[in-house]
Image (cartoon, rainbow over all chains, first blue to last red; front, side):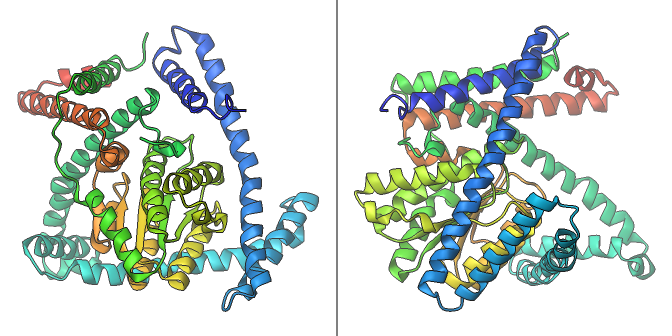
Length: 213
Length: 256
């Protein structure tokens, strides 16, 4: 058992899978067998991830049954509702497929409206976040406020009526400073990703396995 | 014909520079890197939670372990490892909300190791590892509920996020949590910058695991990635000059 728990096994699997993907990306034309092996390994990953959903189901059940047993104030009623709906949809989906009328009714009349409501909350959060971010407390915040107003005016039909320059200045802000900053950001992200990849493949980055660095 | 030879050469240069810096560190040359305020402040945020007697919240975003955004999940888990150890040492609850089910075993392992290292097995509570859903806005609702009901004193948002990033950040702000965020998603970084107390920018998220370890050899790998940035700056400068002269030679070369 101690062999199975040794840290070298997950690091070894990471190393092999990582180099396999690299070989597949750069040399699949020269070594065609690599593509087949890589595709199989990627399929394994999808299957393992699908099984992990079962762990998720157990996790949710444990947490909400705990709330039910403890009668957690302000929570247990929602836990009961969560478990009823989750298992109802699971059972109907498993035995009647997702096209079953009950499943479809639950999805269309309960899930979709709640989902849309959650998405629409974003509009309120964007407003409150923008209010705090755009208060011109210093030069940077003032520049952000000015850029925000100009690009907003560029997109609003009334902007061009107020001043013809809004679309020109707004377009310049979007295409020059904005794109330049985004590219610099992306270059740093790519360099950071490669560096993390090297550390992971070499077994130096072990924090994600819960090990001592 | 090999795919993207220029990309492969760039990869080799980066690998070479990182390995060279690691070699130097192993020979005793201490690498110097700039401080990252967003990572230095993690201890302060956990200390705040300890003083207030309130829990800490952590989310590592939406990316799975096999998607193109998986490095952000790996980086997020490395930060979680550090945060879990600090929370276990201080004896405060750490609530981790999960979107990707396949990371649950990794998070459980991180909690177990943290409790074992801190010598506090009672700290390990699997009820604090909460899988919410693999649907984005259902997950967002769950996280929002945790932030509003349990009022964590600190909230860490580290990994890949999409539109729900602002829901997390604003809910955390409204619950009075000190927030530290990090993502490589260009569209969500501005929201984090606007709302959170500290934000890791660009490659800082990926450097977190090595940075927090404090180990010279690991920190050397961060110094090595700076060589990659110099390489990018050189290519940009040459590209600008050639483009101004009307040449597309470098663009064609890099596309190859």
